Structures are given as structure tokens and as C-alpha cells.
Image 1: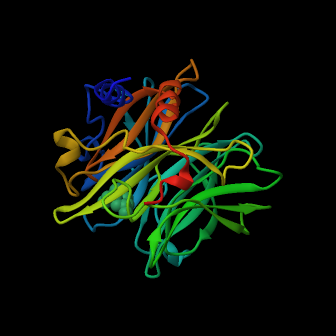
Image 2: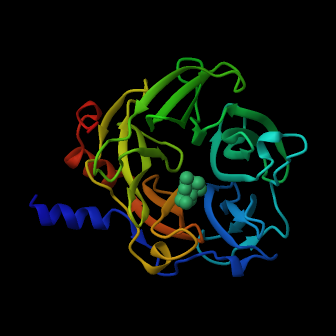
Image 3: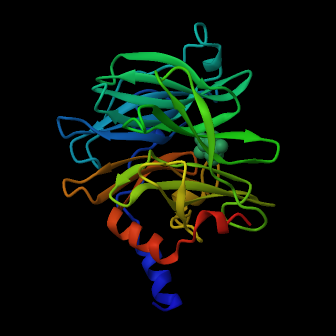
Length: 326
Ligand code: BMA
């Protein structure tokens, strides 16, 4: 493959839906500032459900469900917040809840929703379980501040639950994995992928995008990289492959980003130059990936691709993670 063929392949990996943006504040049944960063799942009825981060006009966020038969058009939005912050009972939610990731857990017959609980101590990770996105069982704070961008793995690894997440320290914001016997007590914290340094697209700060995608080759991880510039940060998305049996082991990591802000709705909004996927659904073929992402922290858009093609690209351009730390 020549350099320009590779470039074309990269551009084709995710195709933006021509009806983007799919959901905007003006589509909401009540008055809000912005709607973005939505978790996604396909319900047993076949409907696509998005659990949308909604920022109200106080600047704080809550989560509201939007449902559509085809995942693109005809959205029905809950008339009021579906999961509202409960700051009185949970101090960690006093300033709102943000950026949900949804994972169906067959063993529990429930969906696990991980989200950022924002409180005076900073942003941390909370977990709730639901069967229907109408009532929720709050498990509580599972990763204390500062921590974000978390998703449960859908199955136990060697008998324990596993969660991927992104704590922040003074030396950087890297991706970690932790383990639990009961979803409440977490330990064996292990570094999975480091942010690079210097001018890289994923220097200084990285984080999980949607939940991990299980495949024969391992767990495909889409992750966001944040490049600080004098004009502000640019949020882009790249790929990594984690070992299926031991997902703390990163096998490959993309050298370049796969998806970044290009269109007007991604480049202009409350926060310019942000694409921030938190959810995907898979087509009937088990390969077609519908990626839902927040654009410029203002609206929700969809891009479609193929898991198989992404894996092929990663095998072609990826490098072992331990050689990419910059
Ligand atoms: C991150 C998160 C996201 C947001 C992004 C860009 O830190 O807070 O919710 O989309 O910044 O503002």
C-alpha cells in the first residue's frame, strides 16, 4: 500500500451519516443548552437507545433516553430526565452526571451504565444497573476523583469483573483497568495504555471512547486522544487492540488517529474541534459499526464503519504499544 492509499483507507474507515447531526438541543422536548456524548445500545425490540448527556442552562448535565427504530431518524425523547443527578443522596453527583457508556451484561441480564459523577471533589466514575432504562439501581462511586471514561467489560475475566477507566495524575492521564469480585470493591489496578508525549495526537491525555468491542482477535478499543494547542485542545479517535484473555495487555496501537473533527458541526460549537464517541451498536451482520458521537459538545452525530476493516487497518499501521510511548 502506498502512503496515499493508506490515507484513503483511513478516511474511509468511518463514514459520516449525511443526515448529521442526528440530535440537537432544538429536538429536545424541554429547554436545554446542548445534547452530546451519548451511550448507545440496541434493545431486544430492535430499537436503538441513546442515553444522552444533556446540559441544561445551569451548565450541569443529566442523562435522557432517546429511542429510534432505525437508529437514525424518528427519535422519541423522554419528556424529562431519565437519570437525573441525585446530589442530596450522592454528593459525587452534586454538579451533574455526564458521558455514559452502556454495556449489556448477559450474566446479570442487566445493562451496566458507567458515567461521570461530577461533585465538589472533582469528576469520578459511578455505576448504575438497569433492565429497561426506566428505573436504575445505583451501585455508587466505583472510581474516586479524578477519573472518567469508564466502561465495564461484558464478561468476567478469570472470574472477576473488569472495568476500563482513565484516572488523572500530575504526570498524565492514562488508561487503566481494575478488577472486582462484586462490582463494588475494585482493586488490582493495572496500567493498560499510556498517553504519549510531545506533539503526538494522543499526547498528555487519552481515554476510552465507547465500550470495548469483543472480537476474535481481542478487544478492539476506540480511544480518544487530546492534543493541546494554543487554540485549544483537539479531540480525535484512534484504535488499540487488547488481548482477549488478558485485556490489560495492549497488543497494538494506532500510530495515527482514525477519526477527527472535520465538519462544521464538529469544528464549531460550545467546545470547538471535538469528536467524542461514547456508544456504538452493531448491525445484524455483527460487523457494521454505528458509532454515535458528541460533536463540539453541542450535538450528536453518527458515523458508520466495519469492525473487520478497522482491525485490518490496525494490523497494517499499528505498532506494539510498548514502542509507542513517545
Ligand atoms: C472531556 C469530557 C467530555 C467533553 C470533552 C471536550 O474532558 O469532559 O465530556 O466532551 O472534554 O470538552
